[in-house]
Every structure is written in structure tokens, then in C-alpha cells.
Image (cartoon, rainbow, N blue to C red; front, side, top):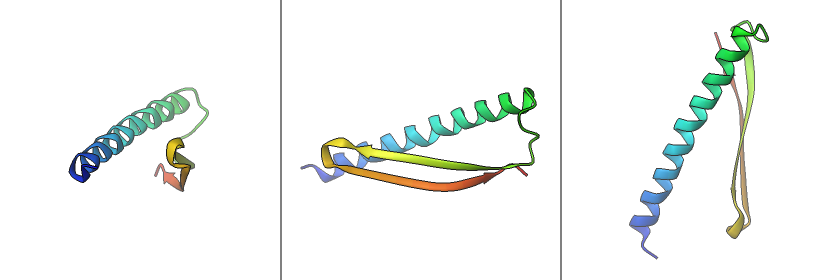
Amino acid sequence: MNEEKMNMEMRKFLKQFGVTSQQKIEHALFKAIEEGRLQGNETLTVKATLELPELGVTHVVEGSIGLQ
């Protein structure tokens, strides 16, 4: 196994996950505010699940995002 290549591939994936997840959240958030479903002062519950089926790994991170 090439550890350096593996490390770079992991970082690449995690960067892509972070950037695209933020875009999805922002889009949904602005749409919900525009539609009146949110006011913009809430605290949202967030849950992210990472799965590696070939390794039998599931990792869940839960938290919150305060809007104000």
C-alpha cells in the first residue's frame, strides 16, 4: 500500500465532501428562509454518515448549526 497516495486520496475525498455538503446546506437553508419555513434564527440539527462498505465501517457525526 502506498500510504502517501492513500492519504492524498482521503484528503481529496474529505475536501470534496466538505465543500459539496456546505453548498447543499446553504442552498436548502436559503430556500427554506425564502419560503418562510425558517426565520434564520434557529439552531438546526445536523447528522453526517460516512460509510466504507468494503471495510464494514460506518461513522456518524452529529451536531448543530446555529443560524444566529
